[in-house]
Length: 368
Ligand code: E4P
Ligand code: PEP
Image (cartoon, rainbow, N blue to C red; front, side, top):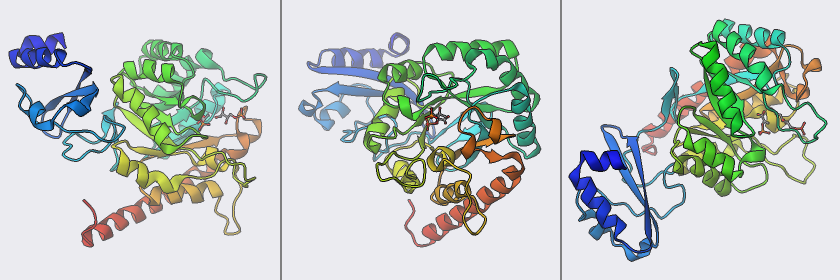
């Protein structure tokens, strides 16, 4: 704020006017628009008393928009010229592309990490998932190796050319542990911080993660709350400053005794894309919860992945393991390494179908 005000007397004048308004607080946010850097000022409080015309008449104001919906920063609003998505460590994350993050639900041994990363590299992958800090239902269950495994995870990631690792954190101190371990390794590997379904509404964690802009964030939908509540949780990250947010669908808890571990909610991929500007991730592993295949021989994890990708998903978080029988967390849902090329080809087919469907929609004049 001080920098901006110093650079521009008009801005200074505007802030003075805003400060004089009663019942109104403001928050300044800068974001790269499609053509230029945009300075946005969010007015919070009793904004009903303000008229759009009066706001547009203030010094330095190009446009005033009344945001009637929640998710002011991550939502889609009319007249919005903000850029879509973001780039991180050489990888693009947007509503227009697809990244696969296959990997270990939980890091167990350096050998398994190496086998996983080698397989990913052989299959042209540069992203992976590696769980170091595990949120477990039982306090007696394996809690993850935590900080202790970071040096070899990042070392091997560098060796096998991994650019981005999705890694769940449970506490803000884990960000420092990750930053420190990355710096020590010195490889050009990046981390996407994952906030899991159990922490979707851990507001203090969200605020702390939102205050840093070094790492992008994958926020998973809470498994027992509404979509709107989860989207507001994502907005917490953005409202604190970090707009590099991917939203993850991972299935919902029901009390209906369904055969899947969670009720698959991937039909909401287009809904999240319509309501917000966030890329949407699907997690077929935690949704389905098993490696079971249908009578056609296609594992259900593949089937629901295809469902999400055909609906326009932008990221897939999926569990693989070199030896699922010995996995310390969620072994029954981990796919086998020999299934990786098949999985990737299945995803390619589904994505191709999605792209053809977009062309078809454009030909009907339906798409924007
Ligand atoms: C894994 O990713 C989670 O930690 C796991 O799904 C938690 O479930 P559980 O502790 O009930 O096995
Ligand atoms: C995970 O992806 O490792 C995980 C714990 O997922 P969720 O938060 O969706 O349960």
